[in-house]
Image (cartoon, one colour):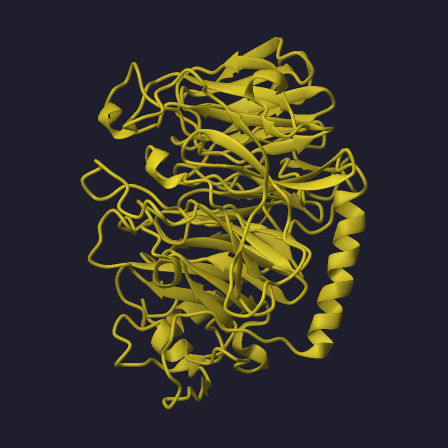
Length: 547
């Protein structure tokens, strides 16, 4: 399909001859860290940061603030996927157009959860349905859409990490969700590059200091592409492979945590292609970058690499415990760690170590040594964590268990106190609840209840205080996405295209079941009175129709 045809159907808001923004061929192509932000923009970013801190984090991070935008995965800081939006629909029908505000076509595979901020919707996908015919073949793509109508504002297009099959899985696209603060978008690309982007894209010019987008988006950097107004504007870039020696596995995934002046990023360090060892045993699993420049500020030094069973896909969370702010991170070794946050940049040329406060082993009786001998063992293996820890009222809720591809079948959700120092494994646990089979889902905690899905195709409701089960729902298919709790409802999609709306209550009630066009791996989100549901192929903006 031609670029002009895409414009005809309203997917690009430019003329049929996009204005070319002159790239700078003399610029050196470098994937190291880049930085810079104008004083005016930094001021607005500070104000937005302050407002976010007041609205979402509060003193105890316990409540749900009045929701508007949804600028990161889950609630700011705590990662709890609970929204205060009201008036959301109980059902919708894309074929009939019922309660559909707009639909935006994606690629053919979409694993990224959308975020909504500043009048834009951002979601990662692949390039199998190109929006720009200049980009041919498999690519990672981050789409920036207009929140009002779903039309394209700009896109980040990233070549594949070739020829490494298990470093950047074919057609998986950009899997990470974005994190937005003010005019800045933070994202981890399919190549393991942490990027800071301009929310306005190239519409307001190619801001620096990174100005070599022409080579960045070209499969062959020696043949730079013209930069047009529908391309992304990269402010700085930090390449985790080049700078840290990270060996990402299958796909790079991180929902970046932003706190103060720093970004906390899990690195996706993992197995080699033969799945028999970790090639980058010394590479960190969690790092902190300066949000303004992309400079590496700190890294964990817990020796997680050798004990990582498959990869490191769990994203960090944050909470305040007994007056102390903590960064929570679940490693690929099945251990949850708490670190003190970074408060200032270290001296030039140095990298600080993240100071560990405590560690909690989610599966203390599982094998700990020579862990890769248990690859393909479905009855005995180490556990890992593929979800994100959720902080709520002084407690952490974590799903963990055998690896979905290579480990034992058992999985659990565990609740434990987030206080203490040292090894708190034996003292902090409050309860544990068995799930059906494997788990990729992050729990939602609301009104004394925990809602969580599993790969066995079940949605569970348990008591947040005790772990006592109230009900479970058979969703007819495997679930990789997480639950959204909003407006008294639980929203969840399956890998066979079933979208469920359940009552967020102690009594099980199925409100509706909608069959959509393709599988769902993204978590539904709500913002500004609209429910966003991403299938593999389409993003639906769902809004209750006016009476």
